[in-house]
Image (cartoon, rainbow, N blue to C red; front, side, top):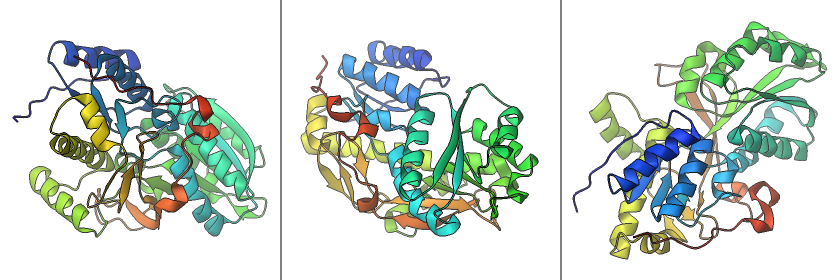
Amino acid sequence: KKVEFVTGDTQTKADAARASAKSMIEKDGAIMITGGSSSGVAVAVQALCQEAGVIFMAGLTHSNDTTGKDRKANGFRHFFNSYMSGAALAPVLANAYGKDRKAYHLTADYNWGYTTEEAVKDSTEAIGWETVNAVKTPLTQTDFSSYIAPVLQSGADVLVLNHYGGNMVNSLTNAVQFGLRDKQVNGKNFEIVVPLYSRLMARGAGENVKGIFGSTNWHWSLSDEGTKAFVKSFGEKYGFPPSQAAHTVYCQTLLYADAAERAGTFNPCGIVEALEGFEFDGLGNGPTLYRAEDHQCFKDVLVVKGKENPTSEFDVLEVVEVTPVAQVTYEPNIPQMGGPEATLGQCNPGT
């Protein structure tokens, strides 16, 4: 079959994303939609695809809700989630900074921020950390100085930045400008944690990310054969190594194509049947399961930190721990994932 595609700009807004996806389905006849760089957008577009009987192969969405309380039978996610970040980070943070810590959270005021704050709080409190405060910050905020100042008076000795993209670049920059990384509180060096990293964020924050822990879905420096093949082909085409976003949407497209081939159909319900409970390897994260109960991929998760001596603008993060899948696996209906009420519903075959 000849593959044709159309693109649209979500503007990182749920309404704009839904309008764009609706046009793709009704005007262009799209039978699969992928992408999204915001969990709010992903949840909205996934719901639209469910209503329209189209498959949604989620892109860059990390909120628990995408395959938690807002899971849908026509939606699938290869990317990891907030719970997995918390589960992977907590042991590394305990080992690096100890179990007697007081954490202050600054959290982006939207879907992803809420679930990431909850996941990191739960996992760090389980190792003995105390959460001193958790403050919501507007998505439109560019100067976080007024939010950083109270941290110094709180008694906290760790700042957790549940921020993504430009929010994280700006809040981390402000925190460093306030001298947080040079301070001692409670007899300990003050530390900063960024639960979810992307290479663009790390590049944007520059020197400020050095030594700061976070998590990521995948990294181009991994040595498995799948990663090496993808890095080579991507580098030949674009002249630089792929990001985790490029990796996850490429994987989603391959997985969709493979499911259609195995099912022998483009019928959404045939695709769903082929992907539910599907086990695979070779895409860079080790053996992976597309779990039937929530359509979430379960695979190894990377803990990274800002590199002390980067060799290029693309070499800004280093992998410090490959967390085995067993450590980040959870039951489908735990409270963070919406509890017993969260269900996929029925596949919609569309027209």
